[in-house]
Length: 257
Image 1 (cartoon, rainbow, N blue to C red):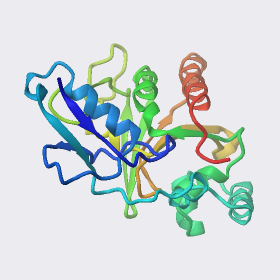
Image 2: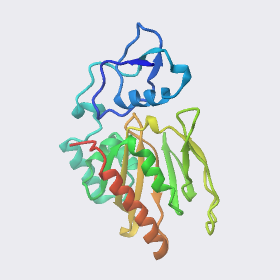
Image 3: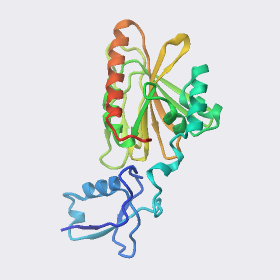
Image 4: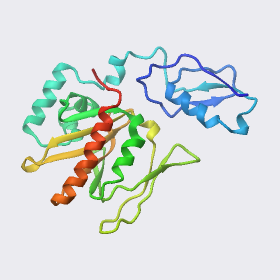
């Protein structure tokens, strides 16, 4: 038998922090999220090393009491911010990350201010399902925008698998028949993601730009995927994938009222 003691659980809207761990120190019992509690429990199932043990959950990244859902990290735009954001997009073709810098607002606030026909968002727990759709894209651009730097990687989005030894999600390039671009590889941390947004925003010449962005705890995007539209055949296939992602995110928990 294994006992995992827990107390002071944050509300369901709080994603896992990825920092929670089991300890045999019986003097330690900190706040925790339900997502992390579930992860730790699953990691112990069937493990002989857990048999006969009594654990406490420790997560030093969480305080108590938690903020209300409306107060969480300031990620939801107020009325004045929403007016400011939508006025900007009425006059500019831009990605949310660029708009955020121009408006001096957190990027997640910019994302939350956009109307439902332009943006849809949910918690980071949808990552695996969204990536399973993204890896069907044969023509896309992976973007990483950090500290004014912009990294672009063009080509198909490779599939990924959760590591069996760590919290990483390992993305590995596979050659795609008929696609000349070389792909990329990487190691992602889905457990650190707070939100996933899909956007349809006007681009140059009025052509819609479809993209999916992944947000961490700092209210700024960690990385994003822009769907590339080519000839009509490519457009219909890529658009179908994007529409599936949009519907998937739309079914998830809402981030802002």
